[in-house]
Image 1: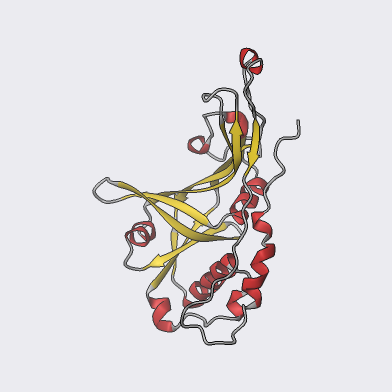
Image 2: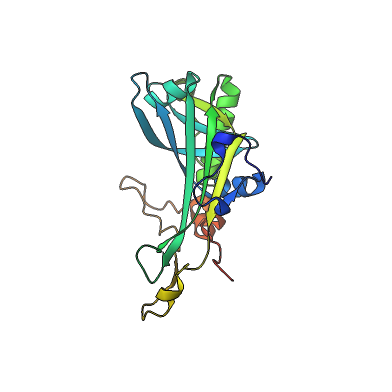
Length: 228
């Protein structure tokens, strides 16, 4: 898709970095773990809350306590804005003005719906857990009925979304190219650290397979960066 799904989702600033095709949007969402959810309260005060998420088909699923302001507001059908940003590196230009970042980001606009069916709530929470630590759902205790009653899950359709990708070399003006200042890209590399056992863990328990597998988490593989 070369055009945005709506006028309000159109990328206006540095529009050449915009992407509206679902393949790009989904790939960014699937590589991230944390979304920032913006809503406006009844008093007009906007607030933004970091939240774990998972994409399941055409829905972005968010969860939280039934008592949380975010879940109450989003669950009531208020407009929300969800953003996911992946930082891939720093761009060091010859001037501070032209220095920037490599990043991939997605913004989704819309109204969320509450998932009420207990089976669907459980499925959503299992999907979220499997997104955070793939395979963990087969190793840890599943949510109890009491825990499910304390948890609210909302789904936001990925209908009104846009992506923005920055992956170019420094764009120095000709007069700056002659300066004796190093310029280039510094990629950001991420990895999970060595697991640290809980202080009350019984002696002899080895690291679970899902935890050990995080060392090869493909989501942490960053794009190679500019090639032109």
